[in-house]
Each structure stands twice: as C-alpha cells, then as structure tokens.
Length: 409
Ligand code: SF4
Image 1 (tube, rainbow, N blue to C red):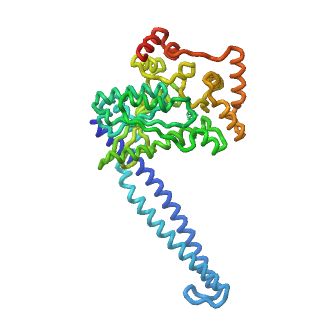
Image 2 (image 1 turned 135 degrees about the vertical axis):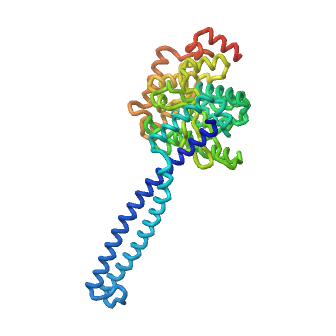
Image 3 (image 1 turned 90 degrees about the vertical axis):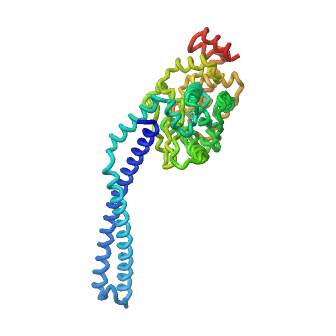
C-alpha cells in the first residue's frame, strides 16, 4: 500500500469511528425523545380528562376559572407533544442515516488495531512519510530531545528533498531558563527553517495567579492550556496558507522519548491526533526519537555539534521551567542553587507567588523549604560551579566533551 493510500485509509477509519459515535449518540437521543413523547402524551390525556371532569370540552370556550386553567394545561400539553414528536422524528432520521455507514465498517477494536498497524508501517519509512506530508511542524522546547528530534527530521526532510515543508514552533511560557526562546530560534536558523514564537497570554505565572493554584502531575494545565491549546490555531493558519483543495497531511514532530517515563513508554512513534484532525487536515504526532536512550541523544548532540542550553552543564537533566511542578525536591534544590549562582530572581518571584495564593508549590513541601535547603547547601559546600561541556563529560566522558568543544568552538 502506498504511503498516501495508508494515510487515506487511516482517515477513513477515523471517519468510521466518528460515524459509530454519532450513531450511538443518535440512538440515545432517540430513546430520550421517545420517553419525552410518552410523558407528553400522558400529560395530554390527563388534561383532556380534567376538562371533561370540569364539565367542558377541549374545543369549546371555557366559562369558569377552573375550566380555563384545565384548557390552558391541555394546550401546553399539546404543544409539548408536538415538540417531542418532531424531536423523535429527527432522531430517527439520524439513526437511519448512520445505520448503513456503521454496517459497512469494522468494530472499534479492529479499527484501533488497523490504525496502529498502518501507523507503525508509516513510521518505518520516514522519507516516504515526509514526501506524502504537506506540512511538517517541529514543536521544540529547545531541550536536548527537541534538538535531536529537529536534527533527525531535517536530515530525513533533506533526503526526501522536502525541507521547504518544515517549520519550527516554540511556546514561550515566560518561566523557563533565560535564553530558551533565543536558542530555539538559533536552532531553526541553523537549518534555514521558518520559526514561530508563540507566547500564551499571561504565561505560566499568569495562569497560576489566575487559578490561585499550581498545576500538578494529575492536572497539567501548564502543558495542556499553554503548550497544546495554542498549537491548533497555528496549524489552522498554516494549513489555510497551503491553499489545498483536499485534506492536508500534517506531521507534528515532538521530542518525546519512551525511556523518559512509563506513560511516555506507552506512546508510539506515530499517532493520530484526533483533537486537531478534522475534515481538512489529518494530523499525526511523530515521536521521531521515541526509541532513543539518553546516551544516544547526547551522542547525536556531540557527533553533530548541536548547540545545547548551558543549563545542562549545571547537572540539571531537563530544560524545563526553572521550577517545574513535576520535578522532585533534589532537582528543585539544584535549580535554586543554579539561580543563586546566576543571580536570577526566580526563587523570590515563585516563593512570593506561593505566599500570595496560599497554595503550596508541591503537595508535600513549599518552595520556601526548597530555598532554605538550597541556602544551607550553599553555606556548607559553597556555590555550585560548572564548566562548558560538563553535560557531555557526564554522559559520554572527557574525550567526547573535548571533541564537542572543538566542534562548537
Ligand atoms: S516544564 Fe513543568 S511546569 Fe513547565 S510547563 Fe512543563 S510540566 Fe509545566
């Protein structure tokens, strides 16, 4: 099966899934409408009996107040019956419209298995995938995994002769380490790819201030509201600019690795993004470095002389927000000591916000406690220091670090 046919089939299976959902919803709506119709009919009979009991007829003109109210009740019941009848008819038509579609397509588990199999095959042939795509978006955090994901995507796009399809996007939350957006731009410029900087309204601290709460692992609003949600409108704009008269195929590249966590290990190399996919675009999330280990990521960075953020040299393993709600206490303490060494205002800014909203940064401890621990360690051991290339030295040894420094001098 050709790559384009596989993409079309994936979309057809998606449409079949939507039709099955619509059929189920229409069936529920028909049952509801049927119940409402029955209740309205019962009310109509009741009001009819009432009129006769009060000595009138449902079409005659009422002469006393009791009869008048019974007639009004009867008219309202007639109106309700009419409405319920129309709703029931509409629901029945929808059910009929979806029934043949549903009968033509396989069940949910078969649909999911077929989609997974097609996606897996597509992921095996990145160059073909890129040729079939209309737009390739690299979402970069500027971190080490994003750099390698970008490098590998660009290499595959060049091999396919399709570098013109690639664009880079970075969301600046305003709470990351200094120099992150600038680094993202430089990384894109290295390959001559268009770069878009997105700055969500209020950023991370604005969102916390507004909600009067820090996000946590269960409610990661920082990633959903500040990183994922702004992506949809950007894709809409870029797809519109393509001016296609058919559905666009969009690859959304992310630097997600399976080795990072159990939940990331469950992700696949290529996945359908049902949230941003629509009739005019099929969006696939491409975790192009899903199978790489941390060691392999550093190997790629070193052998290709890719510029990484100096924060990795301090011993921090992630280029996240200065204070990440997912980080453990040891990383938060180290981040605080790095802030002290760089004379950054973040510890004070975050701790003040924590005091103001009265909600602890983490369930088990406050940022104040983290800052106190960092001060104590600085007092005992002195401020922390680091050298350029320490991240490579730590992961690959001194020889690799020397090679990297020679390559990036
Ligand atoms: S780095 Fe941490 S705090 Fe910042 S957006 Fe990501 S999950 Fe949220």
